[in-house]
Image (cartoon, rainbow, N blue to C red; front, side, top):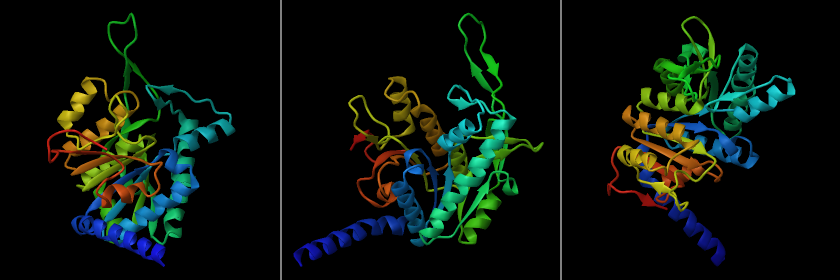
Length: 307
């Protein structure tokens, strides 16, 4: 009996801890980029879907933007289509772009929609081509080559960047009580399809919807200092300092740049969180501790905190 009472008390404390956050964020938009380990582990996928449904049920407006790099790579390999990367981005010729659309706009997108439905929610899957949600242009990549006076411009094919997000499409879906699930495929004014980094799409969606939060799921516990402790309560100024001293480097730089642009564009807070943690989204939004790195315009203590 005492065990059951203890469990009940713990459950009640969890709910009361979450209450002020629910009250604060009701009616607000939260954009979540779904990727990494969370997309390939069955338990994490189910956990994520339940988190998104819970956000909707308590009055928030979640928007999901997803990646799918590993799934694309697997199908390219199965089809014997060679692939290569430049500056961390997949070179995307027309054959590869067909596979990208098949995977992102088809199997991955529909699986996420189905997971949300099975968790009791209502979702609708779209690509950036639907309703011209994402207008894109080709991304120009430059690379410095030893012995050359100027950087070379490299054509990596159908890899794009966001020109414009059609907010009217998102508003229509949200007002209809559907959870939008967006595959990061854009279309140019001329009708060309482009594969776009999902972090960048999520950031631009968060900006145009004036989202309360942008949440980026990763395969690490957030931004970390030299000793491996997770940093949080960061401001753009502090982030710039961490980049300058080498604390933030490598593959985390694009996510951090996305976060800085989102905050500069009006997003209230960006969370870089550990997608390997069950219910990471709920823990970050509705608990005092959180499970990752928080970046805002101004930290309450104006200093880096660790957890």
